[in-house]
Image (tube, rainbow, N blue to C red; front, side):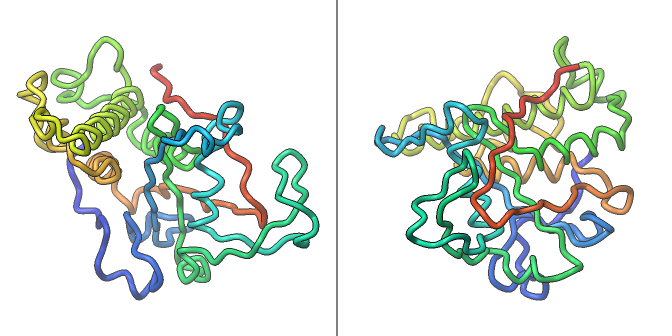
Amino acid sequence: MRNRPYPVEPRDHLGYSNDYRPDVSVAGAGRSRSRLIGDVKFKDSLSSNPEDVGQRGAFVGLGNTEPGTSADIFGLEQRGAVGDGDFRPSDGGGYVAYKKADYAHALSRSDTDVQMYLFETFGGWCNAVKRLFYQMKDKVRNKLSKRQHEDEASWSTRSWLSLQAQRMSVALQLAAAEEIATELRLAAAGNTNPRYPTRPKDIHLENLETPSPKKSALRLWAALAPEPEATSLAGRQRHPSHAHQAHPLYRPSVT
């Protein structure tokens, strides 16, 4: 699908989100044709300090990244008392301190739909991303265009969803690798990939290679998203008053 001018990191956001600038803002693309406000995060579940690596990530998809990210975006209501001990994901008990949402203003409005689009370096996609891609897939009936079929698809990407999910994953991993190379000041950082010299310019892998993994996701999202007036791109993210249960790890289908 051709590139569309969806606002990425809009500067005129104060009217609908005066406390935090969203990564993506699309009028009429949210639930009930409200304004979709998307916050894109690309995080790693590990740490350079082994003692800081949460054990939950070994058992639950996005277990080390989603609870904290969701708390930042949607906030937390106080629950329990300090004497109840730390919050326990296993039974929902314990103390949860109040935390103001980054998007408190947008969440208080009835004409906005705040969504968290979380990716992990190990390949995990949160449920909101999964829903978004499935809704875009339904819009095109999961069929490739003639150009996509002839110029972009491979033996492993014979449907719209498999092709675009693969592209998003590749763009994220290329950006993560480039960020590492840039941090280490490797000579290869910033060089274009010679394997794809003829890809279309609208969703060109080289154009997506950037020191910012999040910007890679944003630029590809803008290139893939269908017309906002045609369908609602996402449902409202529900957020309980305690630290969130992580969603199962999503791995894009290739069927």
